[in-house]
Image (cartoon, rainbow, N blue to C red):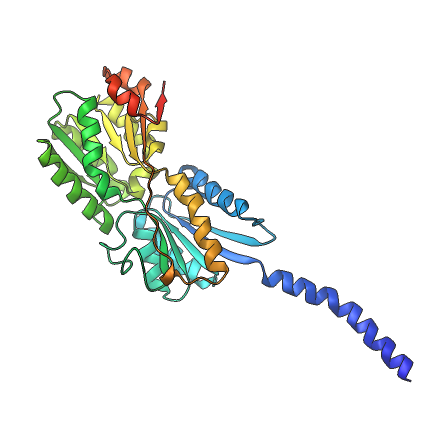
Length: 328
C-alpha cells in the first residue's frame, strides 16, 4: 500500500510540476499599455523604438511582455475612452505619449497603476507631477522641455529667413503644455522683434480653417508647436507651407522628413527608446514617485535643403554647419 501511495504521489508531482512551471512563467509576462496620440502610420516608428528599448534590456515580446497598443488617431477627444480601456486591462505599467493630453487622460482613471510619460512639455508647470527630482504619485518619465527651446527655434528660423518679421504659431490651446510653450514662443518672438500671430487648432476638423488663417494674416513663416493634431497631419501641414512658400520650423524632425524646412528639438524616437528603462525599473519594483523625470541633453537641428530650394531660400553656411542632419 505504501508503494502504491508513493507511486501516486510521484505521478502527481510529475504531472503538476510542468503546470506549476507554466503558471510561474505566465506570471512573469508583463502587461504594458502604450497610448499613442496620433495615427498608426504617424507613430509606428515610436512604438518600434520603445520595443527596441525593451529588447536591449533583455525583454522578448510574447514571452516576457505583451504590449497593449492604442492610437488616438490625432483626435484628442478619443483619449479619455482609450485611457479608460487601457486601465480596465489592469496592466503593470502604462506608457502615455505626446505632450500631456494622454498622460492626463490616464491619470484621471488611475492613481495606482504606474504611468511613464513620454515627450511631455512641462510636467511640473501643468501639474502632472510635483517636481522633476521627486515626481510623487504614480507618474514619472521623460520631458521634451519644448517651451525652453522656443527662443532657439525662432533664432534659427530668423537666421534662415532674412528680413523675417511676422510668424504664425500653430498650436492647440486645449493642451496645457502647449499654453506654456506658446507663452514662451510669444515672449521669445518679441525679444527678437518678431510679430507672433496665434493660430489655434483644437480639432482635426479645424485644421483647414486654421491654415487659411495663416494665409489671411499674411504670415512670412510658420512655427508648429508640439500637438497630436499637427503631428498626425504632418503631410497636410508641410504641403501647405510649401504651396504658400512659407518657411517652417517644427519641434520634431518627422515634419522635415515630410518636407518641412527645419526642426529643432530632442529625438522623439530616442525618448521612446529611453522610456523602456523606466518601464524596466518599475517592473523590477521601483516606484514612479521615486524615479526622477529625465530631461533631454541632446537636441538635433535638421534642415531640408530640397525644401529650401523650392522656397527660393539659400540657407547660410553657418547654419548648415550647426545641423545634425541635412536632407538634400
